[in-house]
Length: 210
Image 1 (cartoon, rainbow, N blue to C red):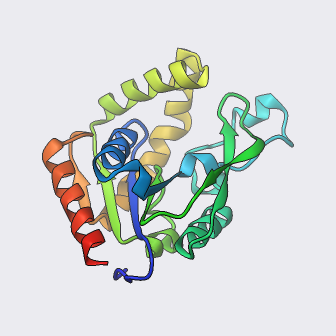
Image 2: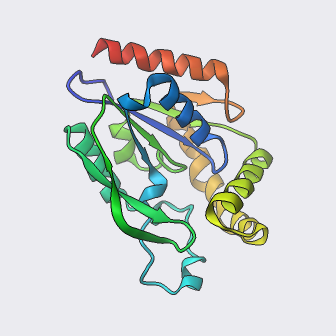
């Protein structure tokens, strides 16, 4: 998508679960300036499962594109592009539901999107000016996922491993890995200082040109 000087720069950061997407996103936020970026993690837009019993929620395939409310995600991206403030949903990963309230996100010169399946949806891809794919070996990704889900999402080792074998790995092979072909830039080894330097320089150049 060519950059229109009247619209924000939209950047997508995709890659497998535990690949280092959040590390890359934080590096961009810190280097470009958080005050210049509206950050929208795709994870916040999981569908609300409050209508299901808890044990059924836990069996949902959260690594399939259908797990996300992309209609709302696209609506919010378009609102930010138009210069409107949005109310991003708050998702509770322990109970698999949306919590009451929203997080206000104001329009900024840069919109930064992050998620495992960002490049699978053609409408999402069409909104992006720069598409980054964070690549990492599978053993590193599962270790990072274990650490994150246990520490941040109240999961057990057994439940994380079961989910990885049941849905995460199969969906990575079916959806995430093939979506790498849409990337403009592939960042190897999960985090790469040289690649980040190049990305930040490109972002600054595009912002200066607006």
